[in-house]
Length: 182
Image (cartoon, rainbow, N blue to C red):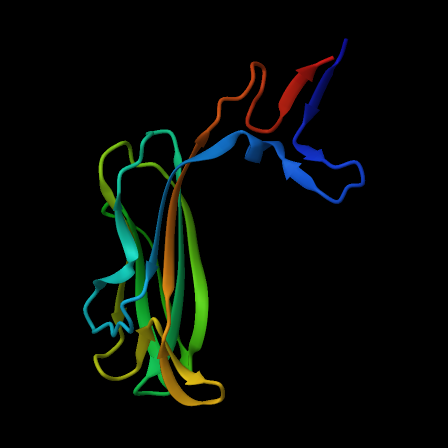
């Protein structure tokens, strides 16, 4: 009798490979919201971005929280736009970054994987501010050029927050692989 230790399970022809770690976790809670309320114009003070945050209560203290926000952005009133973005988890600033450029228009997906903050309610999401009010602005949930011409359109955003937890590994298993006696 021997022991097999593996980190991946694959199909016979090698077309599909799945890390064992993914088989050991599962989603235990999911929040999903599609933002349809139209354009948002951030001013020069940091504010919670509508559709870009949620008050969330994890079910387990040992879980992971995965935050995914699909956000369309475009420039307005200036060819060069600048905004400052801050990502918060339960009152703690995790990361800040800027978004800017000339004639900005894109859709981006911002994704974070953070540890649970326990089983109490906490806010997870973004605060955003423009560099200057009514100048050098980015607008959220809007397009500027549509079909090659100036034609603004409201765009939808989507926020998904999932709580992932260990499924319970078999005896003798660790984080890197499952050990199976033969």
